[in-house]
Amino acid sequence: MNPVAFYKCLADDTRLRSLLLIAREGELCVCELMEALKQSQPKISRHLAQLRQCELLSDRRQGQWVFYSLNPSLPDWASQVLGMTLTQNPAFITENTEALARMQSRPVRDRQCC
Amino acid sequence: MNPVAFYKCLADDTRLRSLLLIAREGELCVCELMEALKQSQPKISRHLAQLRQCELLSDRRQGQWVFYSLNPSLPDWASQVLGMTLTQNPAFITENTEALARMQSRPVRDRQCC
DNA sequence: ACCATATATTCGATATTCCATATATACGGA
DNA sequence: TCCGTATATATGGAATATCGAATATATGGT
Image (cartoon, rainbow over all chains, first blue to last red; front, top):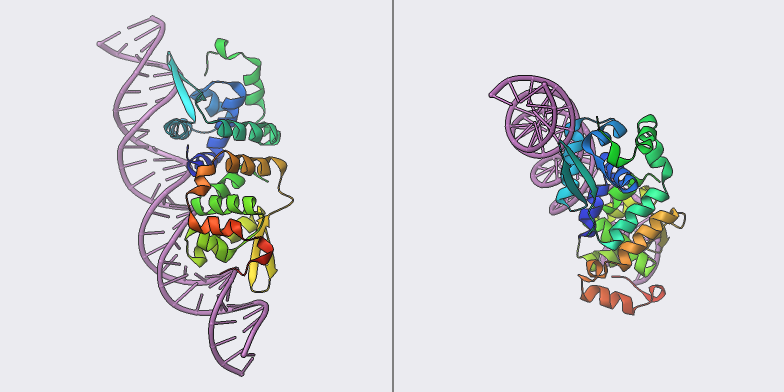
């Protein structure tokens, strides 16, 4: 994993928020991120595709939904960077309010998405 | 420190290498970075200016030379990200060879630069 | 005052990134 | 098979980033 390529992935608001939300929740689908970040479907999808292509994210299709999670073979330092960014910048993620609170109250397994 | 702004600073080859070299050496001047990275003077200077404006670097003039070092008031998570990137990606910095080896053999205080 | 060295800045050209819109594909249910 | 929902991709334009070349500024020595 080239460090510069990695940081390019984190250098966009939508991408970084998506990554940190996914890191926190374990797994999220496109429509959940759309709602959480209040962004259009193509925009979310495009950024997720980029993160998958750079091998930061893995995807798993379940019915009509595609769930994204952190790539398990992500280098250690990269996971640690994400983890530290998440825990030491709680405000960055908590800026979006109701959607995220609702999201947390539902276990992933039971969600019917959008 | 906005995480996205921070990662934008790391999302360029010249900037990231400069930051990591400065983190490792403690303090470096423009001409040392020019030699280490084999890049033009305006290019190095421009990127350092950007890192200073984003408050990742501090500068100190000593005679005709300007020495750059990590901003001491850098948030903890940001320093840790830099430190982890440095220690867990030794190859990224060691790609440039002779110039860096020579640099390490001279203590900062005694250097006459270029 | 003049010159040499180190560093900063400006300017125009090029490259890259980001987005909205439109369209395509995949899946499940009726 | 047809429809609705979820997701992906293609296209073109706007905004931004990066660069090389030229120029400006600062410092120290003669």
